[in-house]
Structures are given as structure tokens and as C-alpha cells.
Length: 186
Image (cartoon, rainbow, N blue to C red; front, side):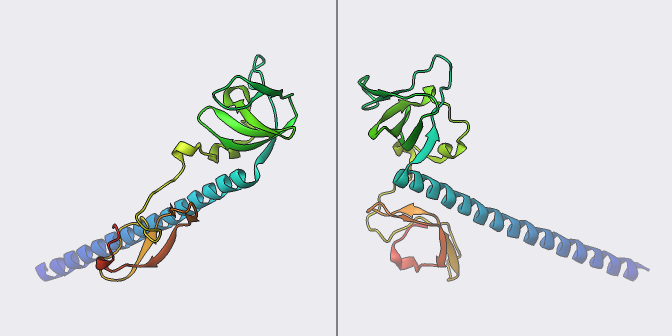
């Protein structure tokens, strides 16, 4: 009887251990998938920003408040008015600073105060980051990258997206693990 109980206990512990390992494997694979999806989202956000910076994003101008004044000024530190923008006129968003959108209107390029412009209809503009918060890394050489830790003996590593010195963006990707003597950060 003791032998049967001991055998049953060993089987139960083995099953519980296998079940826990199986759950850990599922959790780990979900975590990996979640990281992959987050990298895809980050890549898409970067693509949206790059597209807006390259081609602009046209919107219909709306006042945020009834007392808002849609004025196009020559720079964000000036009160020199280049033009007054009427509601429902199409403006093209070119860039974003801390408090202003850089826009093109009537063949003029200037700035409009963000707090005056209603942009809730265009949530895509939330992905346009001001220059101070954009990714910009400086490396000693253009081939260096920042990547997550991988196994030290071969295998592959997930490389995070980064900007080269020349300003080009390298998308997140998987590559073979570098050798320890390459001098790259882990």
C-alpha cells in the first residue's frame, strides 16, 4: 500500500511539474509574441511619423474653442502673423514642436498653436513626436546597434530599432548572436 501511494505521489509530482513547465512554456511563448507585436507597433508608429514628415498630413482646420484663433505665424517664437486660417480650410501638418504644429497653408509654411487647433478627429497626429523626443542615438560607428540580451553561445538576438549617424532608421529585426570580441553592447 505504501509503495502504491509513493508511486501515485511520484506520478502526481511529475504531472504537476510537467504541467508547470507546460504553463511556463505557454507564458514564455505568449511573452515572445507580445514583444514581437510591440515591435511591429513601434515600427508602424515610426513609419507613420516618417510618412508625415516626408509628405505632410492634410486635415480640415477646426477651432478647439470658440475663442481660438487659427493664426499662421512665421516661427514658434514669433507673433508675426503670416495668414489667418479659416475653419474647414485644408492645412497640411508637416511637423510638430512642443506647442506648435508646423503647417503648410496657402503655399505658406508656418506654425499654428496646438491648443487652438482641434485635432481629435485625427488621432494619427498623436504619433508625430516633437524633435526632442524622437529617437536619436549617437554611436561611434554606424554598424553598432542596441539589442536585447541573447544567449552568449550562438543563437539569435532581437535587435531593437535604431537610427544610424546618417539619420536612416534600421527597423527591429532578428540576427545571429555576435561574438563577444566584437565590442558591441549587450
